[in-house]
Length: 197
Image (tube, rainbow, N blue to C red; front, top):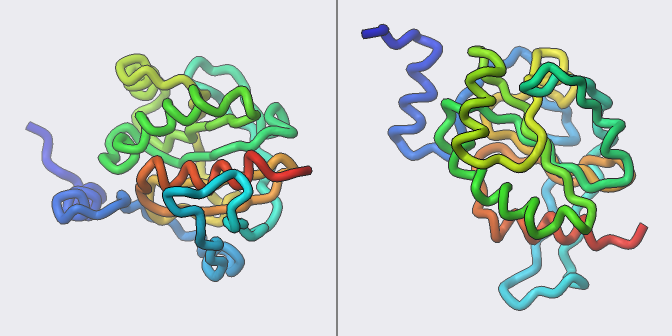
């Protein structure tokens, strides 16, 4: 049986304690805008598309180009004019795995409105592990293999899942670390999807 490496002790401990995110070591500090910005609140159970929920603009999303699990290049430019959710995740991360069924449903419900979800895998075991996991779970959105340059471009990722909501003009509108209930995240998503451009 393999010994547990020190790098896995913290994520396992957080999981056992019920933490909403998995630990990830990073030397890159968060940009001040991402640390200080607090999204607007609103949109209770009876909220409509015209609710008071307005998300701040946190800055321009970085341009990136990564290989998907089949080795094909995928770039942020491909999704110009769409609302893009960029989710940093890994197959071994329980909170990441817990969010996937919700993301699958969100794509089914809102792809026609211009929603794209892109999973950026931080799995170090390579694309085969991600490909097998995606097939088993029925993931219906693009999966690419992340690297340190894309992590750095997004201001660092200290825990996963870390998820960015990007509007049609390429502005980051929300950044969350850890899992969030799909219904709550959908409120933010709808606020951006239904904005008049």
